[in-house]
Amino acid sequence: MRGVDQTDNSTATASKRQYLAAIAASVSLGGCLQFSEADTTANKPRPTSDRPETTTESGPTPDQFEATDDPETPNETKTSSRDRTTEDSTTQSQPTETPALPPGTRWIANAQAPFIAGPVVVDETVIATSLDRHVYAFDIETGAEQWSVSSETKLNKGLSVLDGVAVATGFEEQLGVAVDDGTVTYRKQAGVESGIRAQVIADDAVYQCGVQGGVRALDPDTGEYQWTAPSDKPRVAIDHDGDTICVGLHPTGKHGSPPWAFAGFDAATGDRLWYVERDSDASSVNPQIAVADGTCLAYNSSNHHMRINARTGDIHTEVTDSQIGRLYGTANGTIVVTRGSELQGISNSTENVIWATTVGSGRYNATCFDDGTFWYLSNQTLYKTDISTGDATTVGDLSLGGTSVDGTGVEDGLAVAGETVFVTTSDAHIRALEQP
Image (cartoon, rainbow, N blue to C red; front, side):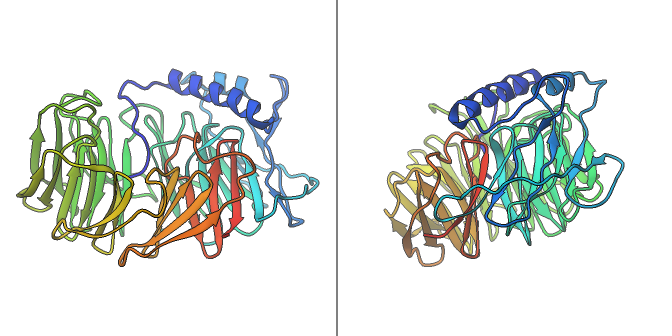
């Protein structure tokens, strides 16, 4: 449910322009990028850690990215710090000096452009995708790069992990990568028919909605679809409760304008169960959706929301002057939203507000759910709220090194594991920070 949707006419050329713009911006923010001449391979910026173990991997230069826009020249490489060789992998490692780290910082790791999805923490690994067209894995304790896998286009529409496979997706491309060693389990090459707009994970599948191809259930090990529900209407939001998948869509393909619609699908078969469409004055339409316990909260991001029976499509309530600002997701039968300056928990079964808090500003740079807790970052201050009770706490200020999480292109640039907070910052870094 995270991420800002793009217009439906995005192209690989636009991706290239955004990549080059990000390179220029990152250089101006701190000179953290290191490129060589066009006929050489640039050394990828290395993770910085207070531990002795570090690795260095090689990555493509901007000129090499230019070459990969030719469909006849695939950009499929993987680098790994592990002592092995696969069909599409190379290994390069060299020692580096360890600079001093800012207070409260456990390690810092770099990419060649800002991170645009993640971080996702899985066991001993932190995973994220970057605008430099790579999926990265870093050691959770040291920040050392474990592996990286390249793509032809940016992968900014979802990063999920299921059964040890990271599924990284973009508007025109997607791939699966084994978390333990960086092996590519599948790759669907560039083209809107292969790309998606949003995805969520279930027990045995990744549910995706696309610009073309409708809704589908994906096996991350093989990249095969367990089922598809074809459609030429762009799906832009997706969620599920195990039994039912609900999506938000633009019936006419006009992003940001009425009409808007929502639909329900059987999670086991992909059969469509219902469809609801509305067309009224709205300043901006970008469907958001949350599903839990057989109920779907469907919001048009402007002034209208409905509470719908997820299996039948029956509308329980419909509000035409909605005050919801942002719908973040569900946990423990509670939907987390913002209304004005308040963060609220709404009962999914009754739509009653069961708690509300003004702890935090009401506008967040990054958010995440973890074990019944909603974490949110406003500027450099970290907050957390217990989703069941609404008890909210100001955790404290993070050490962001003069940068911010804003500007990375992601809304989910935050993860929490134990006493460590992981953030992606606008200077193309992932930072592992101590909780204040």
